[in-house]
Amino acid sequence: MPSTAYQSPTERMKVWADATTLHIRFNNPARHNALSVDMWAAIPKLLAQAEQDDQIRLIVFSGEGEKAFVSGADISQFEDMRAAREAVKHYEAMAEEALMGIYNCSKPTLACIRGFCLGGGVNVAISCDIRIASTDSVFSIPAARLGLGYRFSALKNLVDLVGPGAAKDLFFTARKIDGTEAKSLGLVSRICAPQELPALLAEYTSAMANNAPLTISAGKTIIKEMLKPSDDLDMDHCRRAILACFESEDYAEGRRAFMEKRKPVFTGK
Image (cartoon, rainbow, N blue to C red; front, top):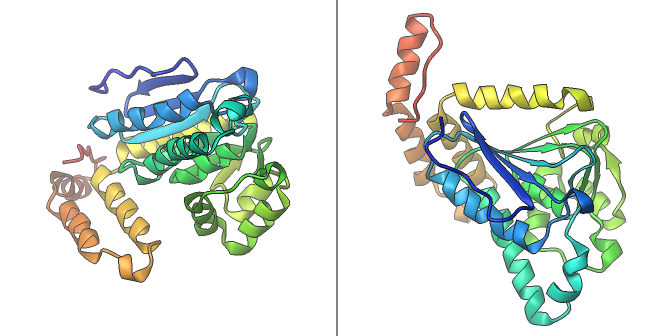
């Protein structure tokens, strides 16, 4: 069982640990899980807990109910949070901290999407390592219809994922796309019928529970470095991550299990 007791800082987030998976669920169904300030603020705190929990190998983000993953920012708060210049800075800094916290998390992150995934919801999803979705999901980035400025990091994540052409298409038009088109663009990795989404998620929670955490972490580190400009690429960091795998108890266990024709038991050490 996970060694950390998880409790959400806000009632608009549900949090629980299930074996080696931490579930973070956006819980604002009255507004289709729109992100309020307290929800943004809760994300870095929960991630910090998970980083210190050796039992957690995957962090899953999802939305309460069947209608939405996240339908964007809670615009009922815009008058208070975005009416003045300093309020805009505060709101944007809070969202940036949450999204970059997901992106920089050392542990694998997965967005399990059903229903509306709009605006800030897309930003949460593309900050994760993996995205799976039901075929009835709806994706859109409506910033151009709201007159909002869009942060560099969010657009970079989008371009890194789907390429500049598709990113411009989605961003300039603010059009809505379904799960099938989202998969064809590379916005999500896999799609399935709505009733099959729990089983698809279980594939990932099982894989992360059974595969070697240090190997996954090294892979995440190296892929992240690949996306940096060449001048910022830290090859020493990559080499250290690879070496840590070969020097680990898990590597020895993997070799033993292979020779003994059994399933390996990895501990992340």
